[in-house]
Image (cartoon, rainbow, N blue to C red; front, side, top):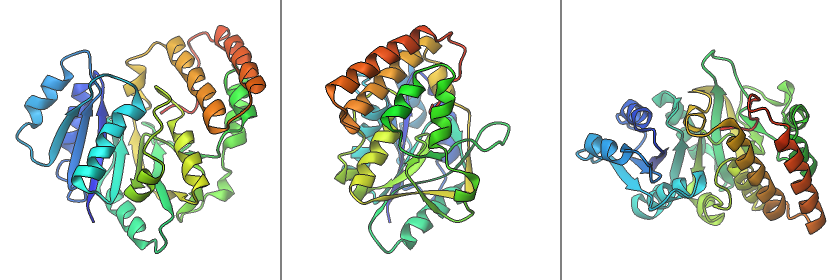
Length: 291
């Protein structure tokens, strides 16, 4: 079974360089697809110089930066159409994991006799080794409204959280998996026409999960394996807090209008509530549902 991994870089060559070097000897990956999302610095030149002689590593460059989904799709499409991978991994360069984690995910995929496995992922740990929310329930329209408001976003997060008794040591079906590190079957990826490129950043996981669930696929969290995430250093280094919230609200609007398909009245209500919420942001709050 061919397996590849897609890694997206934007103005972050040193972190991407370190990440790819850490995983390039993993036999579980037949190909590493490193995508430069049209960086505005010298990232592409640095990465090309580092990996031009590495047959296992393919460096791609986007013609322009259209966001997380568009950049990753460049690598995912290459993996499906050129590498002919059956299983594709997607990872931020600010994560780390052992080869055993990849092997366990591959084995779980191969153990599924039906063809309805969509995405799967380990549990995410942050630098203090604490487990953070690695899976959640699809947000409703009410959840999205709450998420735009200081303080009320905590209620939205709580409403979507799985309780501890719902998560066991065995692989468990969940609705949405975190986008910082996961695997997806090529079959499922093609059926949903890859990642939805209607958002620039944030919320892609919700849209992908919604499409997969509608088509009868199941997403799995594997609680007995973990990966480490440096808590969105990739995004935080590039954007100011208020700008992050503005983009986040735009992504939520796209989700409620194009995925949940709410009517014009609800869409207008969301715009009004979201604009009020943005005024109340001090720029110091932690962005929930972040990658």
